[in-house]
Picture (cartoon, rainbow, N blue to C red):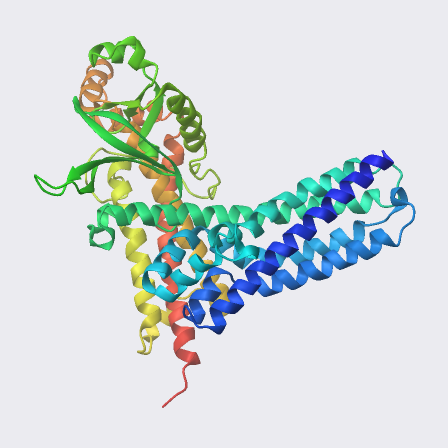
Length: 509
């Protein structure tokens, strides 16, 4: 056990020395870049934010570890847990650096094209002995790689420290704190990378010139996976790239820019929200109807669209192994879709439904879906417009405020306003989810059959069908409709209140 602990500490110290040396090369490189003004200062800062702070922290931390190690004659009794506790605090400086990493490759490439001096400098480094293996992008990746390795190194020290050792509990606590801190920083960096990939894919399809409804970039959308294969859309076969996001699946094809051109552009084939599809390995029945042989079926997937007519798409991925890799990813993504809200105000009473576009409180889930989403954006826009206005609020809007709002501070009101917007968005999403289920069935036929059997009128039949088909969620849909209305009133009050408070804060002229 004592020997294992000593070896774990040796590995930690030796790899830390190599890492500090690499950080030194990076710092030296950026010093030359900034001194010679090879690129603008803000670009240099963007490539390696807080690099000097990271370097100084590790020089200091390595010195503390080395002093502690060399001053202890009995390495098995060495106490080092407090230094790891300090490390947990120190590595928080990595947050900005790691968050910026996903954009680095494209940023370096862009700077090399824009600044010839920067390009020539990086090229010349390879001719120098101490920089012979230097690659700027690879060196910039080292801090994140090292950060992810620290929990493993500390785990080796913890495992090789015997129970009852005075350092054991401190090391265990430091390990849990270090692991959670590294996971948080790594996950943030991963999400930035996933968002950047969404931007890259949108740019390849036309960027901001795309119509608003075809824009891919949203606040919550993340890239998950990409592949290629044959896609059967409406019985037509296309070679396509397949992009999976956390809420969407997108099919894209290459289109030649001109008849004799060797250049291609990307064009969207189709897209489907994940909340409206189910995915399964390609069945023998479906493969037969598409004339797909047994060998091809092994790399096939069928995607059933739960909206409209229940369209079935067939995708033949490039290889069986790619299909086997993709299916677990898409299943996990589907299972991670936001769940509809379940906790509702018990004071609300259930509503009734008719299948029409009537915007009354008895509108169908499908109509309510459109209404709810449009109202969500209406309130968002109205709030932003009101908060930007410089005119005084009218007395009537102040009178509409309930007494609890009058006692609320501006910051609290803004926070509650944002919370209510998010809740309204969830309500709209759930209504859309329920509406999607209803679209799978032939409502007219069901209503007619049930009406003939029961003698009920059409509205009673539809209410009964909704209750049966939604497996008990009929009452909850009613609650959601009332919740929607209550949220809209709350948002109106909060918006007026924030406007009033903002106006009162302005100096009188």
